[in-house]
Image (cartoon, rainbow, N blue to C red; front, side, top):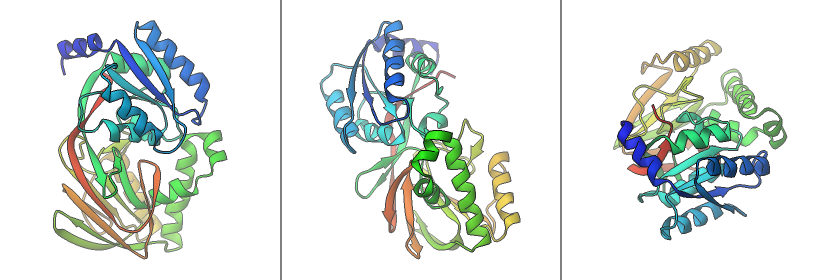
Length: 310
């Protein structure tokens, strides 16, 4: 969007609903900062707190239906943001994500400042980007990525105390341990991946179904040409056979150098099925889903997401 579009977005945001997770890191302090930041911009902010899993979805759905708000913001982790995104999908109310979790994958993927005051200003004065979402069979949606293997192990094995102490670095340490275990101890699995009717089988350490192509302020890129608004999802298969292969894969992700070969493979489509042997745990945007296959379809350009102006 150009300058005119950004001005329209800012003009329309006069009252917002803030759905906040009180269990998130520094929840009370960050909530006060957010309310104060909206007030400084002349924006009325009503706050409602989540009480259980699924509550953010209910609160967001209610906030969107009444017509009282110009935008909805979440303050919490990726779970809170994605519950709200699921409620707003297919509608016109924009979603702003304020990071108060550990991973904050969505906020980091679109360059939202982690400082709450700066984030509020950046989003209120920013753009609206209509993004795709991945939808699972149970109706649950994800924005960044779902997957099996290293990323699911990272989510499952990172203890709460370590997340509170180290933040996102805790995930990095656990992911490194899981990667070494896959390569050195043979903790691999057979993945049968079907993308729009085309099926491949590979022995892998990780399979990712990516909607965003990069995380951590674009320092780490999953694969080639992945875009959150192209109407496609991307299956990324990683098959290191040795420690050297693992370093080669990581180097490619950091350097954005992608080739489909014996250690990496990329497939794009609108519907993706993944079956694993043996059954493995999966995750979506940092939330564990349980063991078993995944069937994912893309919902193209279904969510109005507030993003910082470019």
